[in-house]
Image (cartoon, one colour):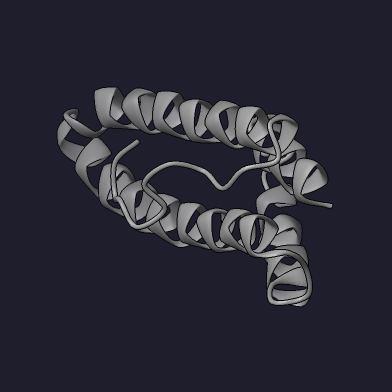
Length: 103
């Protein structure tokens, strides 16, 4: 299910609401698997909430033009976190730096 959540996060570039579905699934499945998998769910939940905060700030700053490059940086940030998550899932290990606000 964790791979599906990462895919939903990436699909949110095309269909905006899929990340909400992904975080709901992450909340439902968290605490119900091995520790390394639970860390992925925690990472995904944090990715959603931190991304939401960053996007709100970037949209507000888009009114003064500086938010546009921030939105691009946010897209790169989300893609990198999802790729790192996919890689960790394939190796059956927890993602690195789950508590970080960056990458």
